[in-house]
Length: 399
Image (cartoon, rainbow, N blue to C red; front, top):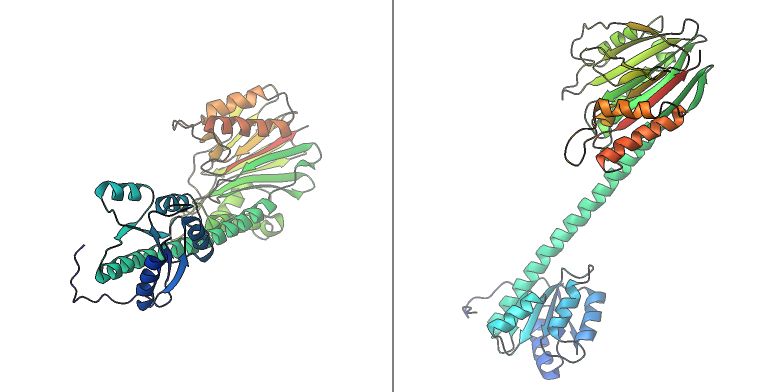
């Protein structure tokens, strides 16, 4: 390497530390003196094994290694460093008196960053050391940015976990929710916190209502929007807005309160109400297609209506549909994350396979049928976490 003798590279930071590993005392003393004149803190070791121990303990900015040493030679030290996750980014310079191309190739292959001839001039020593220190500074800056990013990611994951726990706390308690009505559910949130929620509430002594909603998007914001919507859907809040447990009226009121956000986010929702005296189920939907009834004999009918999600048209009104419930009928609400679960090939599971699975488990209790349905969707997907939230809410009627 040719360096103009008149060029005086800027001195490195006075705080930089260089580890010098050389078994020849005179050579080590001479090189150490040069490095100290550059304003560097110098650590010394007489063989590779000692040098590796100091490198792990002190984490110097740059390590200069003689090639031939007892106990452990320079290239072996390089190999050991590159296999240690804690120090693998260390900057290593090999010193050799035989800087042949094949030797340089071997040293680089075994982990060295640069080479320095033992006969190098003062200018070359300065240039190579400064180059190594600049590289070390850059690597440490990158590592610092990486660690900061990991810390922020950890904070974000903690916030997502707290939000997920809060969302889970809003879900209903399984079991008999009213005389002659059993309820069960299963829920698989995706890795990215979503906005799927469901619940069951009593309107009065003779009726209940239940729903499933989905806030568009993923993350803390849609999840908290969904939580806010769920709070609005509590009976003590709804009674201030409507006079009867009419799902269509509930959706009309919700449509006026939850318009499209400036980012285009919205809700889809299905709401049903059941009268325990007449055994009638009335329902309305705003863009949500995940509801069906499975009769005691096994027949399945989807309880859906084509309608825009909430907030698209401020003056929207919603159609109420009423059906009769018989003894043993089951109503199942689900998020689209269940039947749209993709296989590794990309093919979605689909409603036909979902129906087949429900039919295969019609004879088992509801609290076993829903987990079995989720497990089959998981088997199709090939992983325990779906791309979107996967929720199932089921009610079984004994009338």
